[in-house]
Length: 250
Image 1 (cartoon, helix red, strand yellow):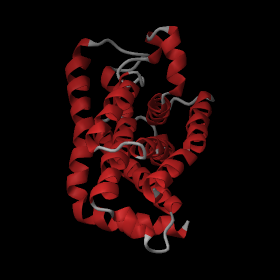
Image 2 (spheres, rainbow, N blue to C red):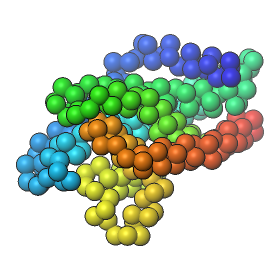
Image 3 (cartoon, helix red, strand yellow):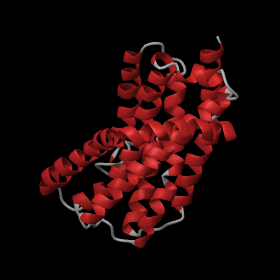
């Protein structure tokens, strides 16, 4: 585990030199969605579950930012470090194992998810869309979806051979999770079969918990959402380690 923290430390030193650019791209996109959909489309949408439209979608932007930051870091960022910078090969020449590299990447993707999620929380709080002090728990919760989306992205990066192929992952995996994640409309509006499939959508669970914590709407089902995210993370964790071993040691 010490090796994984060394990998994380290396990434943080690089991040310290480029954090302004990282912050700009990862934060601007959710804010643009929030502005366009909340203030634009929201003017034509009636209340949803007793909430104004912008109240309904604002907490979901925190989960969306967390998903994007982990995904882009552990796809494009990891691919560049792996194939162009040869950073992982240099690490493996020292006392670092492939497992350390993968866990370090997951820690970094998770940390960026939490960091950029916190920025969005401040923004929606400034817009008056935080209704409960329980929102202070959201950064702690974001560790789970941040780790899961990092694991998923690393698994794909472990099998792809061209940086352009990452677009397939964004379009065929991330985009459906985004569209059916309950961000812009209640999942209950979807056909029953899609609702059932959606229980495998990590973004859906993230949105539900972030929305409940931001609005102070607590129920026992929040534990179920949390347990599913934890279970999926533990289930998928060996996958990127196995795939990266094949990639780096072949």
